Image (cartoon, rainbow, N blue to C red; front, side):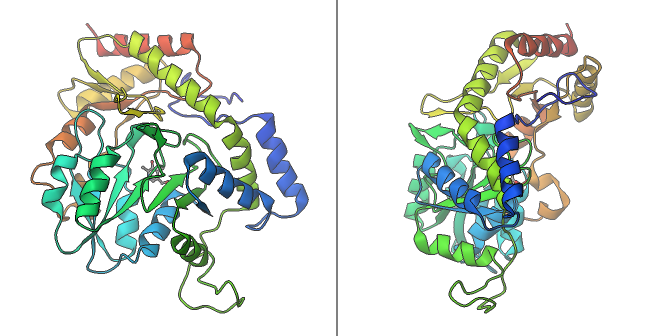
Length: 374
Ligand SMILES: *Cc1c(COP(=O)(O)O)cnc(C)c1O
């Protein structure tokens, strides 16, 4: 559905069809507007099946999903959890909510994910878990991360907010960790407006997360609280949207992969150092198609983005490295974080929504080339 836009090509836009509207209307008309109702179970079971796990626990958003995962694994005060230095901040925040300490690991330069070579130097007696974020749809090296985790008895949480449908060696990401977390915010691969989910193969984690998201109430004894919980539930209306979106997911992924291949053909310029690409050991869903450019300074990149905006193309800088922002400045970190700094400083995400066609993408690629100059 096309919305009126100030720019011609926004970075992201949800793809919502009549089927989604029918499903949401059905949920509203049924009267099951809160967090009970058939769409909740359908969405939880559908996502778990799609990714390849046995349990799904829906949540109010991706950050609450991460918080539940951290808490269900018993991580708390005095514990450390390794997170990538280049990520959206919410995995680090979820660790901090529980009084534990994120430890910042540098990323590698090819797919911008956790550098497994730099993981081990960060592990000490307080380390309890690794949060592997599959950034911009690129899958992490799950074999190496799991091997290190196993050797040091660490939990692995996967943050799959940007990578629903991506694969590591023909297996979907989100099926590797102890718990994996998803987000269905409006700019994600599928959306429920706000929303999230935890997937796991462990029934006690699933049970614990269900209790925690429902005020900590005893499931056998209503209004009896064994502990302080939260209201992190998803509504049936959101789940209805999710069920209808999930049916279209394979089509979205096909489209996003086409968009990536069109971009990679159109984006030729001496200042483009790297375009997002996938490894031969995995498959990316290219959540936000991103490129690295030669820029001299943050101002230089801002100018580039302004020139693009004049050509009516919205763009977005890559995430800022966590270590540069006030809440995370004093955290333990890799001996050097230079790759995350370099990738972040030179990166730009381009319009990636599924309603773009080939001409649009080539048009945007032309605009990027023009904006980069001669
Ligand atoms: C979007 C996102 C989240 C959080 O999702 P919300 O639903 O906005 O809370 C977490 N991690 C990553 C990597 C994300 O991109």
